[in-house]
Structure formats: C-alpha cells, structure tokens
Length: 230
Image (tube, rainbow, N blue to C red; front, side, top):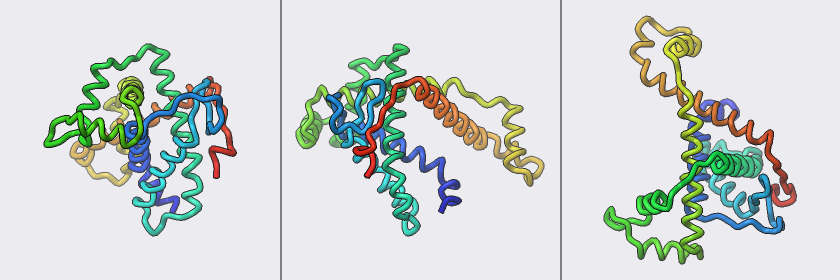
C-alpha cells in the first residue's frame, strides 16, 4: 500500500489540493468565534471542526476512488489530521498574501464567479442559478464573494512562490541521468520537454512546501485535539 501511495503521490496531492479549494469555493467560510468548536487557531484566525469535517470527507472520497479495494481503515484514520494540516497551511498562505500586500479586486471576484460552470446556463452566467445556489447553502452573497476572494488570493500567493522556481539546462541533464540510469543516447533530447515539466513541477511543489513550513515556524498555531480528532 505504501509503495503504491508513493507512486501516485504527486497526482494524489494535487487532486487533494483541488478538492480543498473546491470546498472553500462552494461551501463557504466561517466567521471567527470565541474558539468554541474550533479545531485550530492560526495567528488568531479560527478553523472550525465543520471545515475539517468537510475537507476530510472530500479526502476520504478521493482516496477511496484512487485505491478502491486497497483503501483501508488505517489509511482513513490519518486523513482527518491531514485535512487539518492542509487547512492550517491554506490559512497561513492567505495570511501571508495579505501581509505582503497581495489583493483581489471586486472585479476579479465578479469575473471568477461568472466563470464558474455550475452557475451557467448554455455557456452564459445565470444570476437566477447563482441566487438559488446561495439560497440552497443558506449563504449571503457577501460571504460567498469573500470565500472566492480568499480562493483567488491563495492562487496569487501560490503563483508568486512558484514563479521564483526554474530549472537550468545543466540541472535538467543531471537530473535526467540520475532518474534514468539506463537511458539510451538520444532519449534525453526526445523527452526533454516533458521531463522538464515534471522536474519543474516537483521543484515548485517542494518550494511551496518549504515556504509553508517557514511560515509555520513563526506562526502561533494551536489545535484542539478533542475537536480535530475522532
């Protein structure tokens, strides 16, 4: 099981990230409270048990679909703490984006909402569909728009970190030789473009993880185990 997880980990982690973002986008944010029912606080911002439960359910379904019959109870037990860690990381990145002055305009928020396929009828944004959805989830437009704003802000922060990462030609050649010791002459040239994308993706992910860890080391993070765990 562990070996299979390692083989699929790149795809799994990006799939999980997308699921978390979709959770933020479609199910809303929760206001800060006095801390009751909080799974964690990050520099004073609350992550609720409801948020953890929602992301956990998305993770559970994603892993279950990936591993099918090999999905086990022991694997499922670890997903709840992973959901909380990912929510903490997301909060740290949004806070850092705000600290350094990244902003999302009202126009950007409006344009993003109008591009959500679920709110379209025959390829065009339909406000009636949008309003019905907000009524269904019992959320005011202002709260949903703030959710979308944070989602876009997270995207900007991710791009800022990733845009600082590149792969030099010499590094690419060395990495290809290390990963493909039995490669034949001409293989590198044939696979250069696709391999570069793979290495660049790996480096960007590593840079993002290192960046978040740096934020975590200087942050004030508290967790409520009685809420965050089963």
